[in-house]
Length: 375
Ligand code: UDP
Ligand code: MN
Image (tube, rainbow, N blue to C red; front, side, top):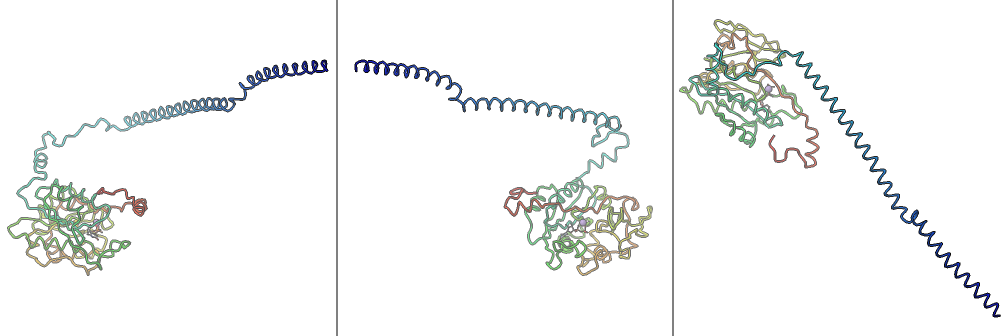
């Protein structure tokens, strides 16, 4: 029993020792395996970060290198282009031209520059411009107004095709620096062009030009020295045109570029006498006066004499010019100007309507690009 108990004690002791050793051993194991497995995810994460970071640095420097190469390539190309251009283009060394030249034959030029836009003894040019609201309107009127600033003795009669004067035109005129009269005269609805109608379908500018003629007859008299000119808002005008307009004694005519299917549609004139012997028009050459609205000027005294002369609605397309001219003159009375009708100082340009399909989508979403901005 004692043996058994002693043996049992010894066995328990041995078991305890082993347990203790085992624990010791176990904890060592735990420690050593702990280094490998406990922060397993931490180690993997840091290794991953390291690898990703390394790859990122490699990728960045590759990109930098590529960008630098592209920059070098571009610079080399543009330098070569400049070199090629300077070899090909002899004008590269052209001098800077100052506005008032000082050479010998410049007296006339200097005199012209000095009078540019300033009052002179000549007649006042009353330019009548019908205009209507559309995306290009401000651009058109800006181009015109800044040309007209170069013209001495100029009075701009702007007639809006609208029931009310619009703030855009009010502001543009107020800041134009020009002498002007602002009228509005809406085209009657049944004469107004539909959105998809071709231009020729209905007469344009009739109501507005007539309103301006009425204003002239109500506000000016024989004591005024003036010439009337119909200046549509989309044409292109050289300031030289206005020098010709000042020469109009009764009714003057001159060539117009880019109209009637021709590079130039013009009267045929005798240089010495200014007499008009014919016209070169090919489009509707049977018109009584086969010329464009931009191709004639009428002295104020004629407009006052022929006090009922107006434009009309119910006439053939392309006959507006003939309609007014036949009421105030005859072919054989016309004064051919612009160096015997040999120079083009006005062009019947037309502005292409801009593509605004993206703007329409934005407007539907209430996100127009021009909210609070006048364009
Ligand atoms: N115009 C207008 N309302 C319109 C269409 C045109 O007041 O509904 C004006 C336009 O701004 C221009 C003149 O009338 O000053 C002549 O129009 P357009 O240039 O279209 O005629 P075209 O060049 O075809 O003769
Ligand atoms: Mn036009």
